[in-house]
Every structure is written in structure tokens, then in C-alpha cells.
Length: 403
Image 1 (cartoon, one colour):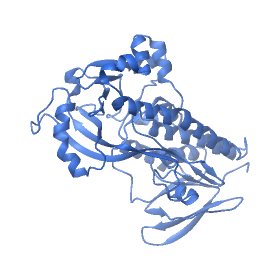
Image 2 (cartoon, helix red, strand yellow):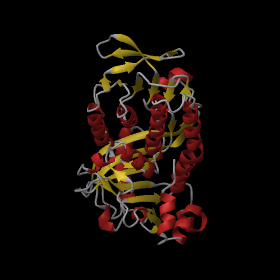
Image 3 (cartoon, helix red, strand yellow):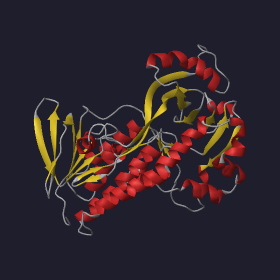
Image 4 (tube, one colour):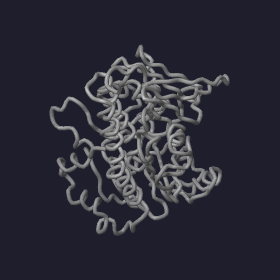
């Protein structure tokens, strides 16, 4: 196919689905998003948008909108520490900004629910885009040479079929589109033995000289502490836990763990910190065998998963839809045929296998898979950072890795 696209159906109104809809609607392509939930997500979830994601958000016109939010900021330094707080090495994100540069490339921080709300408002202003909540996609695929179909169950129980030139699954890790294409259990990769617990916690890490983003290396108590609050000391603390514990068991152990983990070692019940969110979850390294099957396409978590350390899952998903939008717009404008969608699938799978998967895996293992006292001897990445502290150009190059 080459030439005007009549309509694209996107399944999932998360950040990737909304961003894709916005990019297409900006070119006046008709877009319909079907979302199973009754409204936008209010869960804070992810918070940090890596540099490639910042570029995509900027060219969609979204970044300036995000940075108008008083809770949005760019952090300065990320570092690695031992459990006792000893600084090992780090990177200064301010190295990204050269003198006279008119824009700020640094990692941007804003809770995902706020990003979704901003994206939804921007999509709502587009004449050719529609978001339909309470519309659940049912199992099954149907397509011909010109169109693809989704079967929708509305929240009032009515079942409908909808056809479009293309159907894009942006419906997350449990994607119905992916499962309909490949089977419920066909998602190559593995699930980690470790369980992850993400918390939003009020605690003044800066008081103890900690940076905005800290990765703590320890075989038993590895964690990440990253600032997410602007006016108040709200931090995202994500730590590893024993696999198989219930949420209740995790919460019962939390005060004891935080006394060990946090600088200052706050006693349980001391009131020195306040946990406002605890979210345990399993983590995976998985990638679909193809991101294209005829007129069905996959992007973001529907297509691939990785552990959260380094933010490569969210950032990779945003870059997915940036590239996919370029392909679909090129088809719409007659600049290419839909064979370019095969290239989209090939390139994004290659980026997952060569960058997202190995780097996120290394990021995670670095925290618990080595002797903290020998990191500066054995960890090649930390050794490189340590040997080049103050080298702004190398720091810039390392942070500009393209996914």
C-alpha cells in the first residue's frame, strides 16, 4: 500500500498509544483509540524519560507542555553507591547541554499519570483523533489485503467490529493484540527470579548528600532512590525482594528493610519517612518474534519488556511509536510503501536485542550480582566512569546512546 491512510486503530490509551495517535492526528490521519478501562490511568507508575524519549516528546510538541507542569524537572546527577552510602562513581546530566544550546536534553521527570493526562488533552484538540474508554478488545484477528479488524466489547455489553487500514497494539504487557497474533503463552524471553517493589516515599535523601538518582549495589539490599518531587522530598524507591512474598508480607518487612537501606537508618515507627505507594511486581525480559503481522503492528510493552533499571522500557516504547509514526506518515504521504513497516519491525527488534535487553540486564545485575567492595576493580562500566570523571564529552557520548 502507498497513499492516503483512511484510518488507524490503536489499542491502548497509555503513553505510547496516545503519543502515536497525536503524531498521526497532527498529519490529519484519522485515529481511533480503544481503551478497556473506564478512564485515564491515575497510577503514578514510571517517572523518568530518557534522552531518546525526550527527543521524541520534543518533536511531537509534548515536551514543552510537560515542562510547564510545576512537578516536572530535570535531574542533575545519577550515581552508584555501596549500601553504607559510599560514592563509587556517577554521571552529570548537565554535560549534555553545551553553551548556547537552545534546548535541554536532560532526562525529564514527571509521573506517568500526569504525562497521560497531558497527552490526552493534546489528542482531544486534534480533529481527527478519538479516544473511546470502556471499549475492550476481544480475542481474534481478521484482515484482508486492505484492512484489519478488531472486535470490541463496550462497557454496556454491546459487541462491535471495527475495521481500519492498520491496527496497532499499544495495549501493554498482557496485550490482547499480541496474544491474538501469536498465542497466549508465546512471548519469547524469561521472567526474573527477583521480585521488584516500587514505592513512593517521603524522605530527605538530600540531607545525607545523596544525588537526585542513586543506585545502591548490595547482594541483599540493592535498590534505587530517585527524586520525583519538586517542592517536597518525594522519592521513588525501588528495591529487590524475596520472590513469592505477598504484598502484605512485603509491607510487614518494609520498615526493617528501610532501616537498613536508607541513609540515617530511620527506626521503624519513628515518623522520619512516609510511604504513600507500594507496588510489587514481577519483571521480565521478553520480545515478540515480529512487531508486524500483515496490517497488525505492535509497539512498546505490547512488543517487548525489560526490567525498570535505567528506564529503557518506557523510553524504548516511546521511541518505538516515534519510528512507527514516521513510517505510517510516510505511507500516508505517498513517500514509501508499507514494506517500510517490515523495516520498523526489524530495526526495533534489533535495538531491543542489542541495546535495551543487554543494557537493562547489566544495569539490574550490577546492583546485586557482585561484591560491592570490588566494584571499582571488576565492573568495567563503573571503572570507565571513575577513570573519566570530569570528562564532559565522554559523559555526553555515554548518555546519548540511541535506542
